[in-house]
Amino acid sequence: MTDRHALTQTFMQPVTARNSGQDTFLQAVEEVAADVLTIEKNNPDYATAKVLERLTEPDRVISFRVTWVDDAGDVQINRGWRVQTCNAIGPYKGGLRFHPSVTLSDLKFLGFEQVFKNALTGLPLGGGKGGADFDPSGRSDGEIMRFCQAFMTELSRYIGPDMDVPAGDINVGTREIGYLFGAYKSLKGQFEGAITGKGMAFGGSAMRVEATGYGLIYFIQAMLDHAGDTLSGKRIAISGKGNVATHAAEKAICEDGIVVTLSDTSGTLIADDGFSQDAVDWVRTQKQKGADISDPPAHLNLSFEKDALPWDQSFDIALPCATQNEIDANAAHSIINAGAIILAEGANMPLTADALDKIAQSKITYAPGKASNAGGVAISGLEMSQNAHGQFESADAIDQNLKKIMQDIHARAAAEGREDGKINYRRGANVAAYRKVADAITAFGVV
Image (cartoon, rainbow, N blue to C red):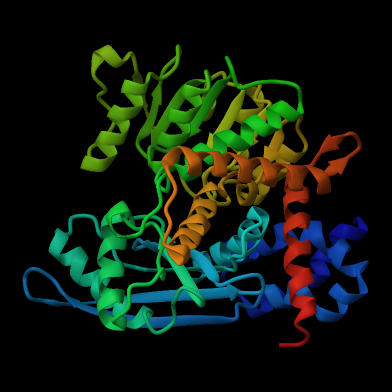
């Protein structure tokens, strides 16, 4: 057992005991701990302050009942949460997701990851996450509006532009943000930047919808540029069909990449010669309509393989953009056998621990989501700045800012991740983010 492994296991024992059954949260903590505990141990200030142990305990976890009335006049009851993990470098910042599978473990994991992701952007943003076990599928606009208003009635007590600034996430898009912000504005009697992801008509930023997917491609381009290579002609396998997946595909096509897959839980769309922009637009439209992707129009030159994963194709770059833990050890083996040179996460923690171990032992260069998919929160941070100053930038200016931020994140991760002539982006991202947060935490004393 290596010293690093022993140190990690010792650290994880009390954390596991305190968070029994919260597997996704514990997985996220252990992954970071393996990279940063040696940094903490060798810095007396960090060690005395017990920085990482503090970060495993959110500043607060808020749980509340959401009571609303459906179209039939029946009372419905859901549970809502806001996890405020750490505000050492700025107000809590992180999305809201509405999904019946949402658990406190998931939100604690996402809030923990958000602290590190936000630190990497270089913007003054803390980390948090929230959501509800509400299922919007099959619900009318009126029901979704009433749920959002009821949710915000409680959440509004704990958020504000200098306190906590939520954004959208799974099933919380521009429509839901509009309902949430409208309720907040009514409850508080103030128009202020307490939520990001707003519509352009009421204080939103250009490029917010595209940001995570575009930023993912900008990060990959920085990786390739560092290696003396380009994206042109590279075959790219993407999982998912949502916002991140389709915008990553769109930007990759613009940069002369060859996108060979998009997918959902029913199977995979394959384009041996590459998706066209029309094909990506069709997938996006199907997603918006709630329709499946199993029967693409013939002129798009796509084939659909039921129950297939994207990783059985031949490709150079793997971009998992669907959901957490979507890639297990078997899928990781397929990615290695496909000849991939880069795997960059578009989703949050899409690799299981076993898959991560397999990828680490291969020749694939791996980029963690806290670095590669930070584009969304970066634009949220820019929206906060625009709201504060009452001045709004053009899409082109925001896009250039996004590209610069992703290049800077790459530079920070690369500087901390150099090992034996190579770059360990996972360790680099974890260490660079940890140092920034740790410097702030130790400066405040014991609070």
